[in-house]
Length: 145
Image (cartoon, rainbow, N blue to C red; front, side, top):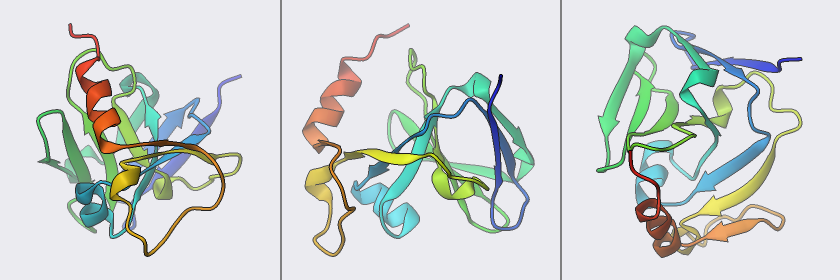
């Protein structure tokens, strides 16, 4: 049985359907994610073939690094997803968890750039935590097409 979850931005101009979404959420504390979202980016990875986007004419992308772009709704400004542009990646989109209508069963499983997290807040519980250096090293170890 296929599991699907739907979601949308604040104005409903961008709507998504995710097939068999991961139940694992991740949080990123890098400077760019904090400026983009106002705090940490919390999302989940999705392969492009499992993400259906309606209202793509309302999606605007900002190329934020050599390997990714950040997408948002050009009508309401909602954070949509972080899109990896480097070849050979299975999970190409990291969708903002707040877009989904239903987050039941999803749990925060890892944090990236933990060494950049400000002291002002912390997520409760134990999970995998990755530093900036370790994350960047994992990108260079990725297979290339």
